[in-house]
Length: 362
Image 1 (cartoon, rainbow, N blue to C red):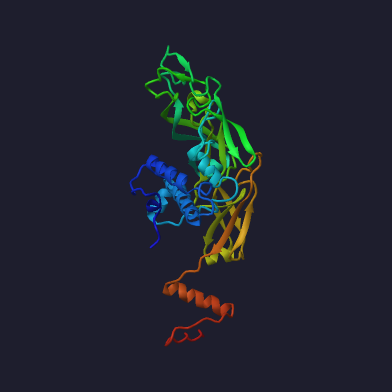
Image 2: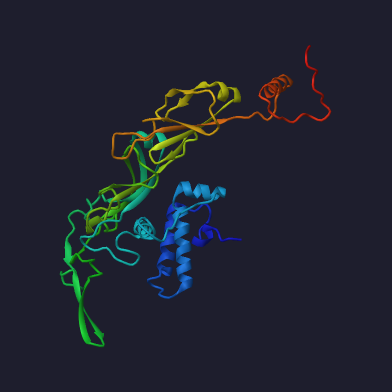
């Protein structure tokens, strides 16, 4: 039996998003290939944990996984938006093991928003809620209790950096590193803010309205500068990335800017012609004349009634594919009429065993 994503991360099925994130952080630090060079087993564990986190950290994907649906993540470990983007959303720009220093940005935040096909066609506004770090109101992001003094860092003596001597085959080499005690600030807070513990940032439930451009497709990421995590006293906030998922509409299939609507008509309607009311993505209907002799699978094009082309003021087309519905059962009267039809057109049909033809009328 395959190991579940919950077992991979070592969490229960009712684990919170924060518990899932915390567990992935720990496993990623332990198994990342950079810290386990040449260890194939560690790399496998890292990949499994990343895949599990990508599914369980997203409420919609997690619900589908819990239902037993198949989840296609594509190739998480290659290309833009792959594993690097996932790690950046969890650990920020500092990476798995980096420490943020004075002048560094806050971490970027990735959230997902679902919109309907109609909203994707014409654009609109979507509300997004997410948990992030915001500037502490108690200290205005400084990390210090109002009126508190700062003292010179004893390790770097105010420089914010340390010169470290390292011995090598070529002799002693000097390198410059950020001071870990003051994180490059050169000074320490004598009385840290009690609300944020001196970091300058606190956990905050944020909400923002985003503009959905007309013609957007699933997987597109919208960037809102400065709406990510606060770096507190260390620097400016990160950015918010909103990944848009366009929900399916049972009436249509989407092919770039074109929409395909499938409908069926009866045999007599196909032979003699009819008129159909076709639903439009904007909520109205339009009439469509079906000519006599229409064949199954015929497609009719209604120009300019599809999706908006992203970045332009034009729309794709609506294609109506017509299928002919063949009844599986017919009444005695309908069968009689069909047999007369077959006789007129000299068509060969099966006749039920034991049934005799009616004598021709005289």
